[in-house]
Length: 192
Image (cartoon, rainbow, N blue to C red):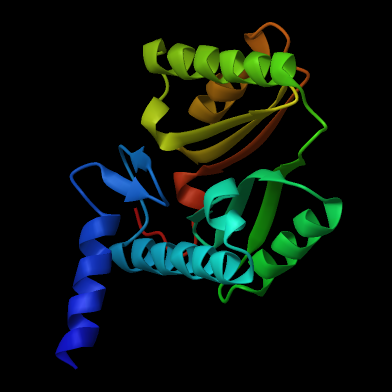
């Protein structure tokens, strides 16, 4: 029984800090989710990551998953289209999944030039969000794939959500902005 409590405490401590930890590596300045919701999301993310790694060890490195209130965001690269479908299916099979957004790309569909352009777009957007006083830049995960910008995170209100999307649309060479931005009041079980 002590081992179970130790595991839960360890999971909680690694999932939360003064600026709450979201998924793997994204800090949330203000996270309206309850501690229980944060723990549930962390467990879902770790469960999916473990299942992916057990399926094929290369997925441990090549696929990133993030969970916010049961909504899963996938990114990374795979060799074959069938792998993308299999990973999406595994995400949907994760207990507690409410939705899955898939930004996984197939290797060979991009080259060095397009990858460099994607990195530049992501850097420009991250910088503009940091300097924009109307946005909490740390609340967002940004991923650019073939000049399509994927934004995943929590906005405090509709104005902030619009501001983040507007900043992304201002960047030169962006083809499309695909937001998965949830308002704090939209999160299930949230009581603000």
